[in-house]
Image (spheres, helix red, strand yellow):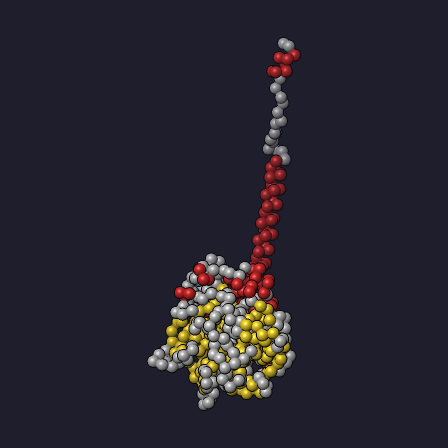
Length: 441
């Protein structure tokens, strides 16, 4: 046989695995199995060491809130007039980084007024900020200082050149901004029908200045505990009427969940009240054939409403604290039907939530930019009987928040003239009448 035939017939040697019952393979297998068991036991012990204390805390610790299940409809789709837009980029920053937490806005002529988180009522004129009133005393640095410091919220201009102000802790006041005179109208210490007022919020005034309609958001929770009020869904809020002549107080509507902004209709026949926790606006009739009645003005709103102010079109501006994204995920909607989750969160992290997320800190970010919003948004359309203008800060892209540093929208006021330095600027992008000395809005 030739050498070539031998090479063709030669077969390559293949490696073979020799198994032996007394070999090493079972030992390796047993070692791997032992390592897996050690890992599983270690992981289980770690999970138990974390879970048991948590369960113990849930059983032993008391929750600061007693939430009840709330039912919401599916939020409206953010389409059409509710489609996300970037129109707030047209807003101009005023008094940037000079105001802490401006809540409500009012004006007399071309002078604007607002209340701030450090307990002051300030006048904004000729580019200057001037303190005209303070209802409490300092220091005003933390949420624990609020009851002593005071917190001016709702503010309205009266018919005689004075301001009516609702302070969350102190009550209702009348302020003469020119003489810096302060008059207490109704103290928060005064019980109304057996219940104290713990969270005086917003107010609206008749044209003759006689009657003031205002909200007491809760008789249990104070403003500094707003997070507990929202998460518990407490239904102890009220809409009240104060007569400046007789000094009588009436409860017009009770069992409200976080009643917030209020607005009297142009004909003064009904009052709108934002029920923040329920994402709706209620209507209470105060004169005419329907007097004493109440109904829903708009429900299932795309966000949680704050203040309500009139527009020149006969509708209303509604500030939104946050939205209910659809499509998207709304945490408040999700938690509303799961009170046990709320209870667990606040049992475990109540102090931490207050420490990490005080309202003052939110306001320093959200409201350090003071914007005059005029004619930039779209009517709510078919969701309400009449044009309701809505501010949705989260309907814009996240980059908008970076541009404007807006964390939530509290209030909006159509105001077509204001003075900044020596320059008079016009603001009438909506059309219609202007607000100013001797003119209606």
